[in-house]
Structure formats: C-alpha cells, structure tokens
Length: 120
Image 1 (cartoon, rainbow, N blue to C red):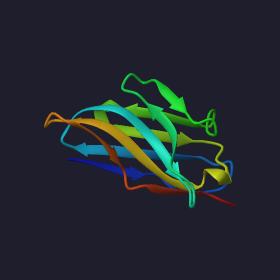
Image 2: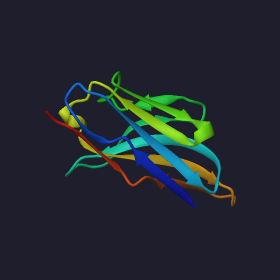
Image 3: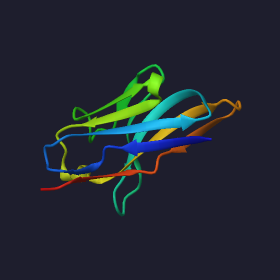
Image 4: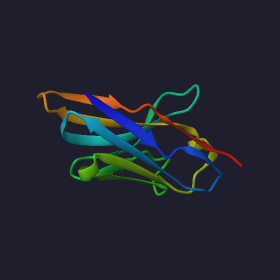
C-alpha cells in the first residue's frame, strides 16, 4: 500500500511562516493530484490547495496569495509553504494523494495530520 508522512507543523506567531512536507512511499507506480486539507475543531475538513501532475494549482479563497503548493516528483513529496499566517489558519493539516499502485489499481490516501497553531 501507500504511506504518507507529514512534517513541518508547529506553533507560530501571527504573520509568521511554516512549510509543511508530505512524503509518499510504498508500492507507487505514479502519482496524480496531490492536495492539502485542513480541519479545525468543530468544522468540516476543507481543501486548502491542490496541485495536479501537470503542476496546475488551485487554492481556497482564504489562502490565496499567502500559501503556495509545490511538488517534487522525484521525491514523491508535496509541500505547502504558508506565509502571513493568521489565527484562523489554526488546524490539523492533512495531505491527500491520488496514487496508481504497481498492482494496477488506484487509490486516494491520507496522511496522519500535522497540527498548525497560529497564536501570540
């Protein structure tokens, strides 16, 4: 199967920056869309940003101009650079990856989540 390991979360002051990483490993033949979601307590999970295999990107309105998603296909890794962070960005952030496995079937996989807290 596929494992996704996230890193880079933590506590940051308003206006600060963090960079999240998510590395995919396992029986991977190819990777399609890679995305970041977030979920705050009492709220539904929402998509923050997505990047396609062709490097097209899309962002939630709430993060446009502040967050940047990128990927390194050689490392099976997706990144989320978060700048000008606000307290309302506080959430657990999850990566989500569409994978074609070597066994010939595809699946969508989730990371375990990494906490981002924006507070003074």
